[in-house]
Amino acid sequence: MPTFTARAAIAMLTLSVLFACGGASDADETPTVQRSPLLRPDNYSETAPDEYRVTLETSAGTVVIQVHRDWAPLGADRFYNLAKGGFYDDSRIYRVVDGFMAQFGLNADPYVNQVWKKEFLVDDPVVETNARGRVAFAKGGRHTRTTELFISYKDNSALDEEGFAPLGEVVEGMDVVDSFYAEYGDGPPRGDGPYQAMAQARGNEYLDADYPELTRILSVTVTPGG
Image (cartoon, rainbow, N blue to C red; front, side, top):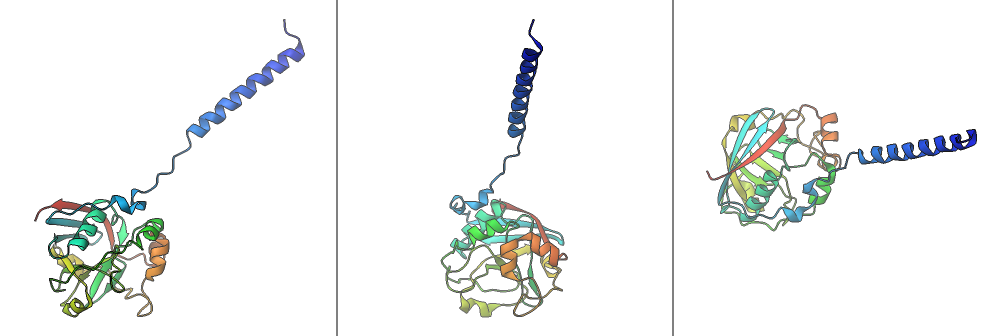
């Protein structure tokens, strides 16, 4: 029969083993941090169909955009890949200027925005005009298109000469576009609305805290064809 000292040693060894097993179990149950696929832009280079539709389910209603690849091939390909990949899901229509346009295209996740902000597209030639309801990529100069788009509220044909190439147009829900929340106005320095650089750097955390009434894009679906 083991002595008291031997029994104590065996008990201590048993507790040690149980503790080690428990620790391993806890470690195995630690949630795995999932990296967003959108952090790898190289995976989003598929050629778009000649015609496709993008449906935006927003907090104001449904908007359907018909995209024509022959209007702006590079822009149509980028929009197709981002929309199909979920880039615009749970995003905000953060810049709405009455009588001019409504702009969206910043991801909810600031880390995703940081990756995509340098994924510049070469400009497409402008073959269609920026009429009311037309959709084009926003840009800050030559060959600077990335992820943001705008929908024209009026005839913005003056933008044609500046190289803004429409890639499609709203075919359903222009009344919804007209109702996008616009009370915050344009961003600095032209107004007190959302600051683009801050929205890019902090994502929805910033927009939802400081501009909670913004119209939201809840989900986006892509359908080939017309």
